[in-house]
Every structure is written in C-alpha cells, then in structure tokens.
Image 1: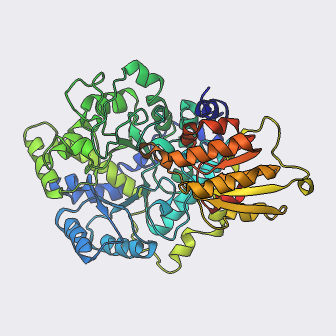
Image 2: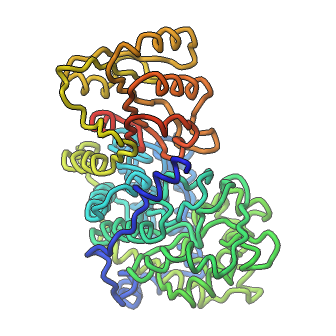
Image 3: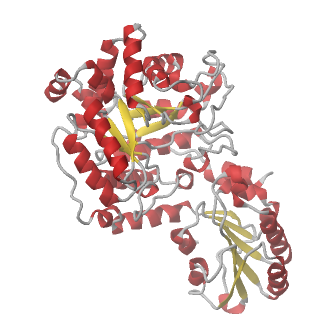
Length: 543
C-alpha cells in the first residue's frame, strides 16, 4: 500500500460527526431578509440600469502599488460606480487608508472583499497566517475551525472587509491537482462539507459573508484554470455523489455566496469549450433551481485564462451574467463589460428585471454588512489588532491538533530513558540550528547537524557518523506545497533519506504537503514518521 493512501484513508480523512454549528435552517443566506428593506429600496430608486450593472462588477485593488493604480481605481468608481473591490497584496495600514478614501468617493458604499483562505495574512504583510485547509483537515474538533472562522471574521471586520472568498469546498480527489490540493480540507466528502460549514458559520455568525468555492467542484483537475480551461468528463451521477455534495450541504447551512469555477464539463453541458462559469445549465438549472441556492453567485476571477481564452473583452462577463452569475469579479475592462451586458439586454438575452434582482441582492448584502452606516476604519494599531495574542494562541492550537503520527509501530515515540540514549538531530535542507533542534535540546543533550543534500561529499561524511547514535531525529525542510514542481523533492534528498533510514533508528518529521511523502518510498520504513503539513515556527516547535 502506498504511504499516501495509508495516510489519507486511516488518519486524515476520517468521517466527522455533524457539529453544533451545522443545524439546518430554512432561513437562507442572512442578507436575503433585507431584500425589501427601506434602505435597499432607497438605494435602488437612485440607480440607473448602467449603475445597477456596475454594482454587479467587482474589480481588483492592491495596497502595494503606486499612485497610478489608485487613480485607475478612483476613475472606475467615479465613472462607473462599481459595486465592490477585491483587495490583494499590500499592508493593512495602506489598505485601510485606501478603503476609507474609496468609500468616501463612492455613490453607493462599496463591498470590500478579500481572497483570504487562511486569514488576511494570506494577502497582507505583517499579519499572522492561519493554517491551510489541508492542515485543518487533520483536526478532529471542528469547533476549533469554527473559532478560526470567528478569528478571521474579527480580522476582516477590523479592516473593513465584508466578504471573504473562502472556504474552498472542493474535494481534492486528484493528488496531482495543481490549483486546489493543500487548499482543500481533504478527499472525504463528509469532512470537506462539515469543515467548510464550520469555517463558514464562524465567519457569518460574526459579520463576514463566506463564499463556498469552486462550484461545481475543482478538485479532480490536473490543469490550473488560471492558465487554461480544465476539462472534467464526469457524469451528473458522479457529481451528485461527490463533487456537488459539500456545496449542497453549504447551501442547506445558509452560505451567502457561491463562486463558480472555470471548468468545462462536456457530459453536463455539451456546448464546446464552454466554461461552467458561463453555463446556464450548470448555474441556473443545477445550482439555483435544483439545489435551491438563493444567495449570490460570484464568478471566479474573470482575468483567468480558463474563461478569457476564447472570448473578447466584455463578452465573457456578459455571458456570465446571462448564465446566472450575480457578480463578475476581477473584471479588467469595466467599460467593455457594461457595454456588452447592455447589448445583451437589447438582444433580450437578459432582462432589465434580471439585472435589478441581482443588484437588489447585492444592496441587501451591503445593508447586512452595515454599509448603510458609513464608518471610517481606524488605522492606528491596525497591524497589532490583526495579529492579537488570542489569534496566535489559536493558530498554535490548530497546528498542535493537526500533528499526525504516521509510523510508530515499535512505540519509539515518545522517546523514553533519555539519559541512556545517544541522540543526533539532523535538519535536512535547512542550515544552522533550527527551532526544531533547539526545542529538542530542551529535553536532553543531543548533537545537532544540518545538511544540504545537494552536497554529496557532506552527505557521505554525515551518513558515516550517524550509526554511532542510538536514535537519529531528523526534520525534512525546504519542500514545496505544489505537486507541479514535484513538491520540491530532488533526487539527492531521496538518496540521502534512503541511506539515513536504512542504516539508523530514525524518527523523521515531514514539514510539508502529505502527498509529497509518497515520492520517498523509504519513509515507509522509518521507526516513526510525524507529519506537520506545513513548515513554520509553530510546527517546528510543536513537532
């Protein structure tokens, strides 16, 4: 049996019982109740059709770019009245400053969104990062994931962010998936659904709207939709049994937004090379009518080659709206998008009433988010507030609860009778004394080594020394989360670990993606193998 199969079938991807946060409600997304609120009515009465279209368009904004970018965003807000901004890289201070300014000049308050799957630190410098979703997949206590959702929501509220484009609700059923992979909760549909709901509820219960993505399921692809259009040849029966399951559960639990994926599903919609983002059958018929989703449908980024490759500027955005999307995001040519959507209204492919309903939902979300009361963001101490001690404690706890001991058949862990054992530590592909080694040294006297496995002479010298020790405790560093670069595993690393395991009693910690373990067969033969999923100071210390 391959070690990765052992990992995921026995340890990580267990079935999770329904958490307290998952009790099904019939209320629908929380903002739906405000569709006919007087404030929503008052805003709608003052919007032209062009302005209603623009409310359905969100654009990308960055807080690490120069004045030219700020001018460009300012012009788009003033000229077209776009409905929202999605912030990407930058700093909290600058983003807060820009948000305050952009809100001030906008006729209708802007929805501010971020793609922050592991918290705002995913995008912003000097902000603590929460664990990846695959790491969270190893945690048995889903209330911790709810707490993470709450902590991420607290970050968002402090920075004036109303929508998080998370969680990823895709089932990662292709180990070579280049774009989902470690961003997924795992391979088990129950686990993905339950953990997605816990994360979503943690955010929505605390004032930030969540987004289940990427519908109808981006897990079984070996093509990155940022660069091309993946083709998935699954039948509807297969989708119902697997890919659609977490999304149905998220709908039943009242998620506010669902993001559509740039995928081609020829056995579902036979139109040649049509991305699911642009498919009325997939969005209107399956997602909205059959699955009963009443919230906001948002596209994946409209600058991605998976959707732009075969269409002219503005054309894909118009087709996305016709197909049933309510929001088109990361639009790079707003003027062309508005023009083409208006053309499609004239051609009766989409009606003014359709646009009005989409816009009304968006304005209702703005009311739910508190945008009827414009309050500037306090910039003082914002970075410190985004990385509070309570957040750091939660992050540490999440990593601690995710650690997975894969091999330990001889019960070598925990190591006992330390005073009678001669122990060496080895940091593989990381120089100097690591946090991992320093923590081990707190328990007993050890000899610490580090090795760059590309230096064959140094490898041979170290391998000749190690058999004189009773136990070798090694950490494998410097790998990569991505399968398309073979997880950063080089032949020299494989050769070193093979010899290390063969000639020594070994305890190895893998600081990286679990799927990478399968690339080194000898890891099956270690006396103990500990998986941390990620490499950072938290996991080094805890391991």
